[in-house]
Image 1: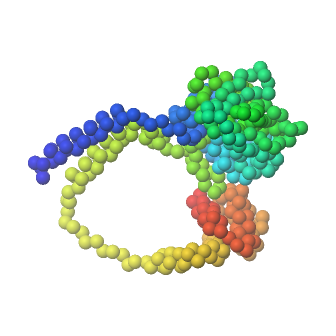
Image 2: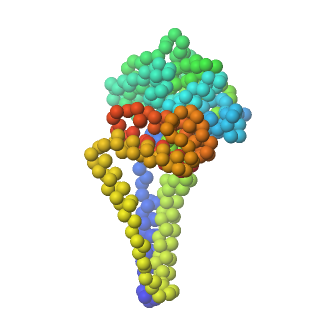
Image 3: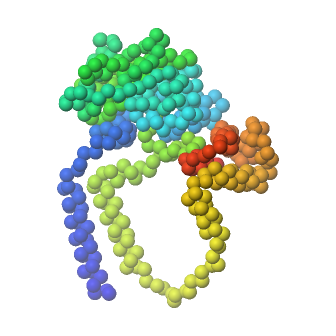
Length: 401
């Protein structure tokens, strides 16, 4: 073994070097995914905009929000535990469909206090459509050049072009008397794509072409001027930039993704990481010599209760009896609440929510969201698999805090 070990190491080293050489010289394929990631240098990332925002809002604080707005705005409010009282401009570029109804309500409260919400996306959460009474439609580009022109109501502001687009998203319905038209999108016909909506003491700015804010378009010719003019409609104030890099839970909490992801996107770093893992594996293989005699493994007595539970659960799932399974899960959860916290679960009212939040140490809003959802499930005659999955996520999140 000692004689062939150097030969094996040499062969493996040559393989790794060859792989590195091939990987580094390989032509990298352009990724046109519309990620709207503020850390991404890809064509449809937002790293250029994100870098320039401090210059556009000079002398004001730029904060990156890695949480659902409901959690962040609640924490950074007058009665929250954050380090400041949030006020200024809240910016969301693309991917706004993750917003829960609770987060939308918090954003609207934020605007009502005299702040500004800016969203650029193709569509918005249904709660926004219903509250603001707007509709968004899509018109295919009849031309082959896939180019659309973006312009402003104010003729003194620079228009721009958007290429690599299949058509225009535009506001097909809105309150034309109380809402202000700020801009248009045009292929074969001019349509409204940028509006300002008064709401309470603040304003909401809605825009339907998020690709205009991406690296590809900002760096192409002088198209960045269009972005400067769009953002000029925002007041001079602090900026809260809604981050792409977040991981959602039923309560709206979020965490920033690991920085390792950025390294893995870089070809050289990725191969360096693989090389380190390979040599670590080799080290473990050639040093895994036994230093004592073999100890017999005694298997513990197998607990079949879990297998029985899985079998029964599968029977309910196969028969699609989601209502029965949902009610059993609710019954078990309430029983555990009675056992763990000594609380009567006969009436799930506001007093029960306060007691449970106090004894469990959870936020009252989070507990209310869970209990209200249970009450809603109990009132339904038919339940779906999605309802059961959502209930399970809520309960798991309750105990994971």
